[in-house]
Amino acid sequence: MTINPVKVGLIGLGTVGGGTFAVLERNQQEITRRAGRGIEVAAVAVRDVAKARRLVGEALPVTDRPLELVRQPDIDIVVELMGGYEPARTLVLEAIAHGKHVVTANKALLARHGNEIFEAARARGVMVAFEAAVAGGIPIIKALREGLTANRIEWIAGIINGTSNFILSEMRARGLPFETVLAEAQRLGYAEADPTFDIEGVDAAHKLTILSAIAFGVPIHFDAAYTEGIGRLAAADIKYAEQLGYRIKLLGITKRTALGVELRVHPTLVPMQRLLASVEGAMNAVLVKGDAVGVTLYYGKGAGAEPTASAVVADLVDVTRMHTADPENRVPHLAFQAEHMADLPWLSIDDTVTSYYFRMRVADRPGVLADIARILADHRISIDALFQREPGEGESQTDIIMLTHDAVERDVNRAIAAIEALPTVLAKVIRIRQEELV
Ligand code: NAP
Ligand code: HSE
Image (cartoon, rainbow, N blue to C red; front, side, top):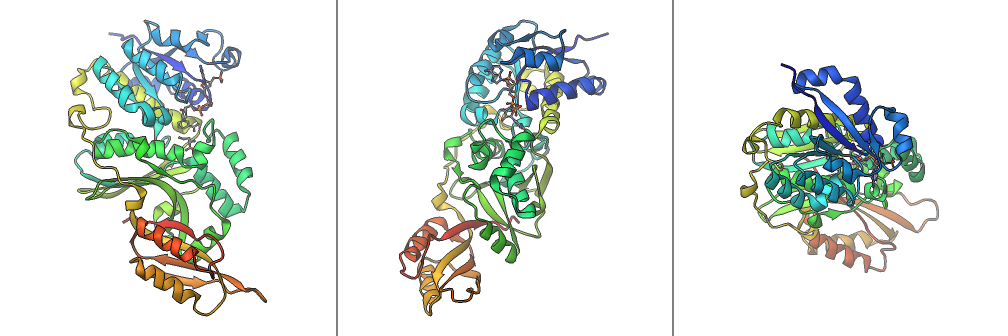
């Protein structure tokens, strides 16, 4: 018996949409053998129809009216690869209302409106799949929702923004200026339409928020995320970190503690011997700590046309396989049954307990270090390692670089304020968090 192919409506034919179209065409036979039936793009929606035509030819319907596409009766699955909040949100909700399954790579949309979208999908009995929304081609959503389902997840830490990792790697290895590397990331299709999302850590926070919901069975809560990007990182700190045996990476970290859930994105010192420290370019890597399995690591291309298409097509195959299954028997959108999702307290960054790197520009005078050490001790911060840059000939200033043991961020903030008030401390104290990741 021949089963009709599943019909897909594709909104967006840019980096990811174009990649998805190409992979579906190229691997058509292999995909059909896996899915049990064909998966066929039936219509495409874009803004620039003529440009899309050059890619897909004349035979396929192409429209600049995506709202019509999501209402088309013959379409089974809508693939949203346009990005942004609106009209993406309206289109996804409209597709769901019309009984279509949805596949999306849009982490910004899910981080802001995921709870609403998943609830609408649940009520209508359709699937919303989003593997491509986090860590590009790495099947991290599948791993968390299915492979690690036996575990109580303790924490996740990952390099989940390819653009910022590419920028950090190229700046460190080739000494290239920030702007040059960012332009290259944009040319390669890694960056978001608004690249400040990449640089300021917002894109990583979108992804982390989704991971945290799936890991802990909590609603998606983007507003709880602390976000600090790579924009203010100085080359001097990258160099000093290396001297201390660390590499600086933009990490997304979410942790379940006795007090609540930590959700934070910031540049982080990672010990050189950890695999995460060697993740370069647009590659992503995610560490997940489960109570039964221990620490597991997922690594692969985090951005770009075909790596991301790989995740989109995997979702299409999953949805096709489960198309006719009873909705109750499908894997829940956020890994936990909707009625068993439970909110936990969300911790402010002030409650974070971690170790720190400090760089202090000081007058090269006796007693300066003693004053700083006293302030740190008064705030329960103990020094783990310390060195002082040798001042140049005739120089009256120097840098003190130190690593601390674990401390509470609130105490660290107070200590920094007191240190900056010393007349011998000549500039704002640079502070970068440090994680051992074990
Ligand atoms: P992109 O290259 O800018 O492509 C966007 C596509 O959407 C274009 O074809 C554009 O059409 C179409 N589009 C935009 N607004 C539209 C509208 N109002 N109506 C109809 N079509 C519209 O973006 P992308 O890099 O492929 O990213 C797509 C999504 O995937 C985003 O959510 C992004 O965050 C996510 N993502 C991207 C990557 C990556 O590596 N790039 C990886 C993972 C996830 P025109 O070309 O005609 O303007
Ligand atoms: N702009 C994103 C990144 C694309 O650089 O990681 C992949 O989500």
